[in-house]
Length: 253
Length: 159
Length: 106
Image (cartoon, rainbow over all chains, first blue to last red):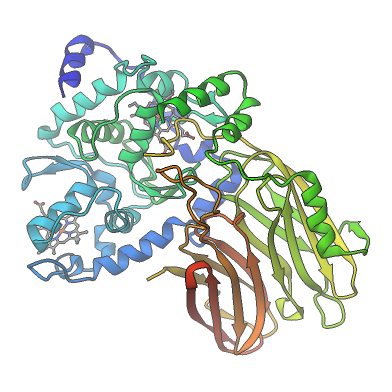
């Protein structure tokens, strides 16, 4: 947090070379046709194994309240559009929360059950199930004024040089987008497909896990899962991708 | 794991071609790799003294893959798939995984079409060979070379 | 519980060839990787998958550690009559998963 504040002061004025709307493209388009085909076919996309679990968890009564997600929310299909507008401001937490945190708020506040661990099978599965309902919908960040300072902090973090390599996210994802880095095409960093089945992980993982990988790549200290810094970055990434079609659960190399 | 990352970056910087090599040197294990000899031996074990003919088999695999952990692959064989004339089995081999015999699928006339698909692992750039075994005792083959690049900004392997 | 997904066409005509797609949750641990403490993670793979159609075997595949995690396998078969496709995956550590799917032949 100290670092975030320090850098905010230093670089608050830096303007980013934002990608014009017409040039925005999902990381999907930087993948080889065979990996694209894996994402396109629900039977070849291993993420669907998590969605299957998500359906199970959705209907399980849990916690002291002995209620299931379905008891309050009905069919998972009713979650259409939700993932496309998260993170959002949660009144019950008085803070912006991403979808994982929203689900965990329902765990603790509604079901009266212990929160799921980040990247646990349960949380990823439920997130995948909820996210899948927003497929093909446009990313639509809420215009909630309470989110503004956080989205702004995310924008600043995105443009701030950090880590031992002294790189910013923008230097790779905007200035060098489409170029090659050790065999990988540098994508524009749009959060359109999360959670993703990443071939590297051989597993489903969250956007925060992806960001963590980039921070490690920059030789910067990754934040703890759920840290407000990640939520701020997520908010900004969603704003940057506003209008793009949601494609979760995606496949990425 | 920072150390591995540095090494990876370093190797990766010395040229795109080094990316594959970087992956290999980073693998935290060193099993006896299947050498091309092992590949030939594994094929020989299946084919025996029969002749290996080129043709009839189509091996569909991307020539360049971003990550070797999950590589989609299809094998299609031209055959009427009748009781008298069909593909009995499809075998897939590779050159450089610790073990060269990737899979063996048993089919018959009930398959209707001799076509299978799966996802395989490739530790590095190498040759893949598909062999179809026909009901008349003949063997047909096709091969493909696959270049495996590596994903950038991967996670620390050991956390 | 291990998850397995099977996809068949909803209905097919007699004599038609259709594709069977399967996906199953499994780490397919090669037995060659090192774990956090430096020791090798023991091999844990699915070794075999079979499919029968109304009791008659129509497909069998031997898998190795070179098959990717969460194995995906697709194959074909001829629609003979309505009935059940039975799938069984077996492997290391007593792994055994069975699954069935209905097929309607019009």
